[in-house]
Length: 483
Image 1: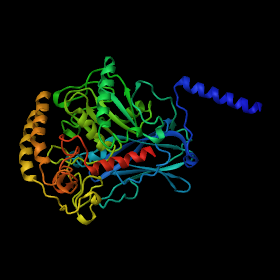
Image 2: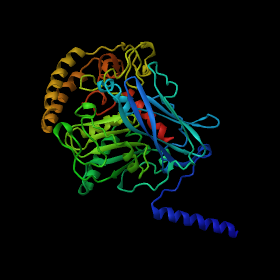
Image 3: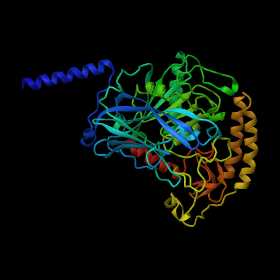
Image 4: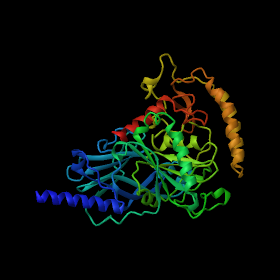
């Protein structure tokens, strides 16, 4: 009896110590999870380097983080999404313990013209539940036939070794609750919104910006119906200066995460190449997905599947961009537009079927990946007034390219509104508007690739809804985090 009382006192004392130090207790896991994992998070940092036709991976370190925020039942990824696949296998038995599909900055960069001329190197990280025993980490790359090839990289890891960095996590930042959820990271999507380019005095502005953008997300299906499966927090990390880098305007701001316009020499594309530093700070809060909200008026953003999304807080279409980019980074959805300037060359290899759930090469209409959502009698490909739309859109794209050379953000936003007013009735008036089919023009290709609907959040800035195919794709991903 005295032993039991003493044990209860020790447990209570340990709980108090954890609360006082701000550390989160490791949650009790189901038996299957607990057999293989400790309940903490291990991060594998590496460099992804190479050029078009040749790539390599170089380990950069292993980092122990806090409690594992992901599902304890959905450990092996069934989605078949992503250009790459990360796997964790038991070193002794070879059993697959954990996997996740993902995309990366390197994976996009290798499709650019620059990658044909020179080498590049990019920081990447993979987070997974800390194993109890030695494991083998594997990275696979998707082949043109859709399968994942033999491992691109294999690395043996002993989680108990001295090579795991166990130093205390950095606490430079303030976690701000933004939206509810179930309060159990293991059974919900934990979304973390990072403040970028906000000075110390701007904490209130960041909180207001983040709540506005998150509100737009949670008003959009399937997020609206799944709100109880989503918890959102903000992380306010002050920056020395307001705003982010903008090379074309000669602005070189000192911001917390180093985000910058002009990624891949595309003016509106915003990325940061400081992934390891970002992960160090983000580890202060539980997260499954990240969004970087940067303090700027200029239109811009980006989203890479299972990496993160970026969005300018103060542009007039910020709410739309926030939702659109999360379509990429969370749902693995492809861009459905094809006329805007991008730096990619053959983003989808000719003759291959895209892995993204909302784009198809329609190689075999009888096996269309969203065939169950196509109304009976709908022709495939589905006709639409593409030539008429393209003629109007081409003129707007030319004007937009000219505006991009200047600094008049208000004029650019006015053009967006002009485009919306002109193209909304055109697309809404299509014979097959509101139906699922296969409409030519998608994923940066005017010909040979098809999207599910004539209009969608992934195609233009006009609608406030995803089409049924995109909505289903997002809901399936939410299932990975909420079960």
